[in-house]
Amino acid sequence: MKTVCGLERYTWVILLATFALLLSKWPASAQFLPQPSDPSLFDNVIDVPAGSILVDNFTIGSSTQLNLSGGIIGENFGIGVDGGPNNNIEVNINSGNVGQNITANTGTVVNIGGGSFGFRFFANAGSTVNISGGVFGPIFLADSGSEINLFGTDFLLTEVELTTSGFVITETPITGVIGETITINTRSRVGITTSLSGTLADGKAFDFGLSPQISPNIADFFAEDALLTVTLVPEPGAMLTAVILALGGALRRRRRA
Image (cartoon, rainbow, N blue to C red; front, top):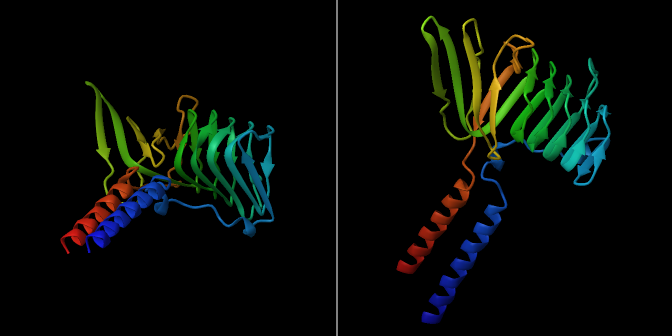
């Protein structure tokens, strides 16, 4: 009987270690993030792994999926054609580098989980950009009718108001339950500069200015009727901790039994 109990205990330890290993390879936030579509849904699939380079002024057309995972995309990358028609176009960026002047055009979907981006990113009307990671350049433009969805572990709205006596800074953390999507309608207005900052699901920090006006003196632009949402996801390792605690509790209960 003692030998059986000992084997049973070792079995639980092995299971615990296996689950820990598997979960360490799987981000805790993955279940809340947009996932790439099945490549079979596209006529053209372009993979850009590490060591691959797409030339400047590269543009993809309808029924195309592009997956960047460690490679390089040159400047003036066109996702779809300006003015369309664009049908069934998806770009998935997990790592790698994209040069300046990226444009997501009408009818396109861009899923960004990592990578670095050059000087300017433009989300045209009718485009959808899902951001859960990555490092962005100084200019992000969200046109009227575009959709920008952010996925991260914390978000903060900051308003800086210019008064006769100086500046008044108001910081408002965006709170909610994990997996909840919240629409951000606040924009900068006369005398008040508004920004949205936080930590994306990959752990990278971001800070977007929410000016509804395009100006040479203002880096970021988010149109009044651009849809801007944030979704809270678990901290890295949160799910791993929860499973370890659950399995540990089950092991203790088995011992007592």
